Length: 75
Image (cartoon, rainbow, N blue to C red; front, top):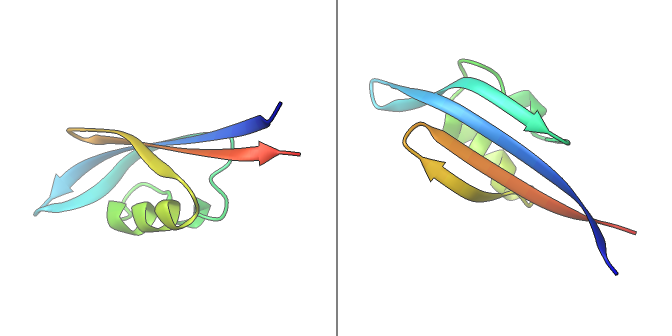
């Protein structure tokens, strides 16, 4: 039976002049290698691009919150 480690990243943001800016971040598990993009005041698009390029997928997107998930197979 395959086992998986699940990593979850939640980004809460606000819009400033139409630009989505990170307001709060919560990481459960690991956000490697995107930790450098996940800080208050950074643009969401930068963090989002990194996460999606590193096997995260969006599992929920509502109003001002985006939730990403990555499942990593454990050998």
